[in-house]
Image 1 (tube, one colour):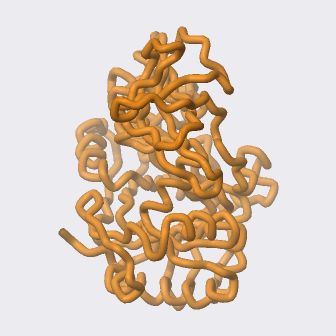
Image 2: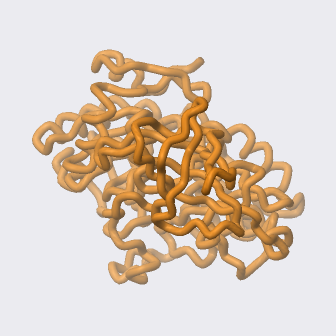
Length: 378
């Protein structure tokens, strides 16, 4: 089991390390409560070096990406990215990811670590053999950091960052910290403003050190996978393998917005004729206890669905989660339900997602790239 490029720094910081998707990564440095609260109040730095970085390049790169993804990458301006899905023929979600428009001849995919090998194999097997395209899998050659929180821009600038700062959510540029060449994207998985930073594995330590040193003046702390999961849950973001999988369609998961219907893609035909029998909802538990995956959801004593993930949020002072309920059931926001956990029925309510308001920057789609972040010539 390989160490992430920053494993030594994590050990020195006293982090609790765990295995995740074949990597040894920090679960937490201090406490989940401190790490989640600090992310929302100041800033936190997460190691995301386990995320897969794939590059599709060649004259037909965008044509190939359009066939593979639910997004039309030619409609994405240069230096901008979008949340996208890989679907199978039945419309099931093989993975959710970010696709970045690098040039007329290249796109970059940031994929889930648990699906990395599967995604690469699936993409290779579904490429048109006549397409002028190749795939570069950067496994083991890169590191990734997520700098998240309201003070993240101050931390980034104080770290000695050189380059053009992306100002819109989803925008990205190349820059440098501590002399290391980096790709810096204004995205994240917490609902806070922040950046994701990618570079060569050999540069991970000096970049981490520069950010940690700069962040000390802004109340930033390092944070682990456990806090990251709570933060995404507070935003109602689905986690692949729990809230979405290859038997779940974007329509069931409430991800219709991540599907561009202008053009053909694998799974489109199935989705066009799909009548979802269930839908993803948020859950807020009112009794003492946490909703657990697979726990039945009941309405007036009748099972109507099941929990897919749940946690306790110190920011909300409540247990929250996600699950699926029958599409035909009249279960709106505020509807009283029960969640059965280990034979005990917990009082809960259907909740609107996200549980907390997002504080990300406006995306390029909302501001139409008024900062002209897509004006670089292709």
